[in-house]
Image (cartoon, rainbow, N blue to C red):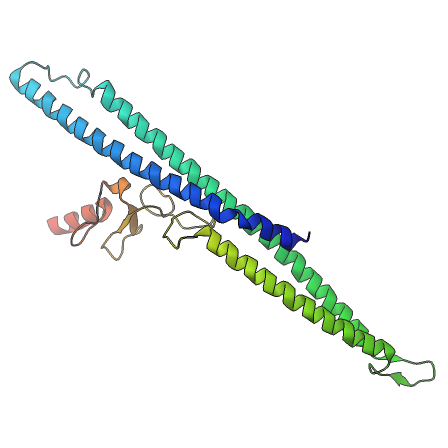
Length: 248
């Protein structure tokens, strides 16, 4: 089995593997959102209970004593575990795709070297050689005819290999995103980073309306958003700068 055939065979299972990982990521994301929503409601209720207790005098307003319930803290720890699992799945999907890309890069390098050698051999075969009597043999004699035949066969082989390579490349691109969904899993270790967390693009993001914002894009969770803001939105850094300018 050639390298290309082996690569295509391994590539066939990639879409199903990625589909399962993406589906699990969506399930984990839904579970995380439900858990966070439940935790927020619990914490808001506990904060309100504490306020009522302080006003009635039943609770001492001592910040070293006041704390959330164990249930609320457990929910927060559970959210962290789910988030870590999501990151682990994303890394697995990235490594899987990156491995196939590296294999394809290796084959492209080998294919380019073989193509260069075949062209050099074809050029050498087609070069006119001088006979002992001073006459020049043209490529129309036996050696030349054989050389041209070999060149035609080589060109045909190169065309077939290039077509198979193009099909494999297209299949890999389809496997990375089989459903055409906008999945923010990195495919390049040099992918730019955004937000205060300095991480790559993922999930829902919001853009700062300050054209001079140094960061520009922010993850919803990092800036405390649950949905796209209505009207203009500024990150905390740009909002503070605008407020200072207004105060002058």
